[in-house]
Length: 95
Image (cartoon, rainbow, N blue to C red; front, side, top):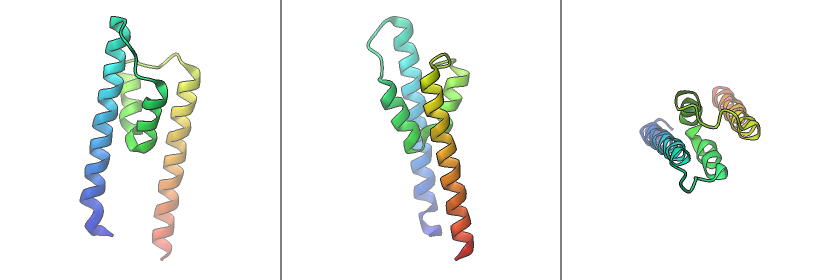
């Protein structure tokens, strides 16, 4: 398992960079009146592991802070990811 840690870390770094870029781009497009990135795409990237960048972008860029359904979905994704991570850690410690 430990041989995969660099690949897992690279994946999470990459997905978080991509998520940040998507949030930044959507914020910029909103300000310029251009075509927007669908919320479903932003949430998909968060669900694929980019939730830390999504939450940071939400706070730092002040983006998607008033859309209650989006906030609820993003927070739900984060809770599920934390629960899944804790469950995985717990199961690895038992074996």
